[in-house]
Image 1 (cartoon, rainbow, N blue to C red):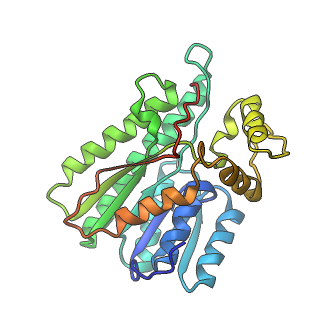
Image 2 (image 1 turned 45 degrees about the horizontal axis):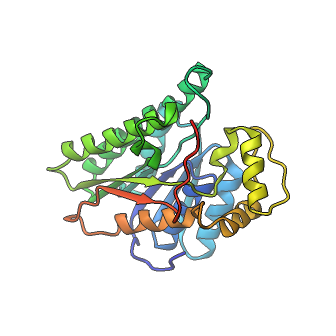
Length: 275
């Protein structure tokens, strides 16, 4: 984690900041001097991260909410602007996946993925742009997509991330005359609780390959120490959330005349999960 103050005086919002990639991004931005607004559904986890930021001399606020409730995102942006007077960085990270074929898939799972991965991201982008324009900010919006968006046959989850890529590219075109930049970050396989909705047998196999004695539960969360061991023991196949946070930090610290369009962050070996 960087301890620089390159973002001192700036306001940043990170959605999906309860754990994994979102938590790592929030911690990185906070360590760099930004006042970070952590948004997610798990208050305790975000409060722990916020406390760490404050202990290191930074500023952090926790806002609990479900991004699929569309008014939550506008309220989040409004709160950040009301408390700090501006908004410089918006990281749309909240996302989830349900594995499974299209023929056997659950339409309610599809709805949840599109509501979270696509519609919430759209609303977050729109609210952030309006706020950044209103305060004349040199703004940075970072959308967290996925390398599965580069696959033509990745299933429903990949379809949501194809949509994210299209949204990012379209918004970049719309903002060419503004002092607001759009960066699309596509992580590969990362050691997070992202796969909590995958088949338990798949998760158990991954843990066994890593030499970890733990029993995954459907929809459950692995302990932070388990995830850390997974990242350390499977470095060739699984990236660390900090790797993605470093990429985001790189993008948001560039001068406004530099437009970082797309970043792929993946471990050395490719790891395709069946859809």
